[in-house]
Image 1 (tube, rainbow, N blue to C red):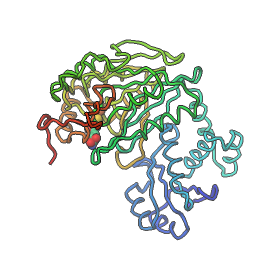
Image 2 (image 1 turned 30 degrees about the horizontal axis):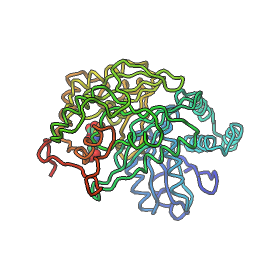
Image 3 (image 1 turned 90 degrees about the vertical axis):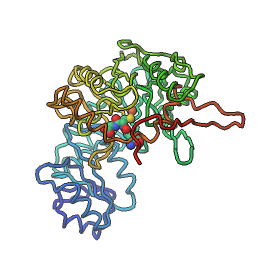
Length: 431
Ligand SMILES: N[C@@H](CCC(=O)N[C@@H](CS)C(=O)NCC(=O)O)C(=O)O
Ligand SMILES: [Fe+2]
């Protein structure tokens, strides 16, 4: 196996055999990172690598990627893996070691530890072409808007800060308010991480946007508004969702006029994020009120399309519909092929790292629920899968907060807030 030491913390390698992986522990390595997508020629596969790494007492991290399809999610995952394993050297491998070196160089440049000339010199030292790494950095720097994704592993949600480099204005999309259903505790860890990034980048929050009233996590929109004074917004069909849940919760005081938000977007509405044009597409199917925000060349599709290897969102919540979702998805796929698509969840199929960015072209070519499938087949596939899914564990907790724009219930006379759980209101008990 070809292996070369880059520094005290990182070595790169070509594809190792299982026997070679088993000897890496003795060689002092603490972790093995596999950068090869499943099924690449000559790859031994993530299962075999994971087992061999366990045998060697090594942590194993699966970050399948290609340099042509590289996104910030891949960069973030590699950086995080390196940071988590700082006790001993990490061995990162792909087919030849080239992707590993390129990824290392990209992170060094983004984090300000290396210049472009130093990247070229690094490539020369190891006999590897760094053109693709520099091309990625160029593409990344030229993006308008800039998009930073924050993955929340507890709810598999992706929250976004979308910013205009010209004006330093930004929007926060689909922020999560942390909630532990076992203890009933809430916290603002996710939202505070977003605020720290906003402060560090010198951004001003102009918008706090939700794509729909979420069924699997509480929205941090209201908390973030209290910290930033930015405008909150959601799609105008939220009033239908409010009506639906007002009935389920038997909740006469719930206002169903959308007045918990500063702005209700109608389908086709446009707005500005700093100097960037943005518009709203109506994308129901997962919920009655789901919308897609198209900001510059970036579409925030939330629970319509997931990453191509995951498929699409479920349609069995109250107000959901598979044929309506199909129509919404077709409208998204009619955007130009190069449109960047940012999804709202990632369930990490095959144990890969979280990913959230694709393009319309990639989705059309390879989405597991959409490529080479017609409407009828999609509806059947979607409904068959929906029948197997348990309700999200927070659906009853989350909706009563999210139909009020992320406001927690008002405190009772003892100062404590309570959630209300309707019994036998939803189908599909998972015993
Ligand atoms: N197990 C998750 C449920 C996740 C879930 O239902 N996700 C929705 C989006 S809110 C979905 O569309 N899942 C698609 C699928 O699993 O096919 C939870 O308890 O929160
Ligand atoms: Fe959802």
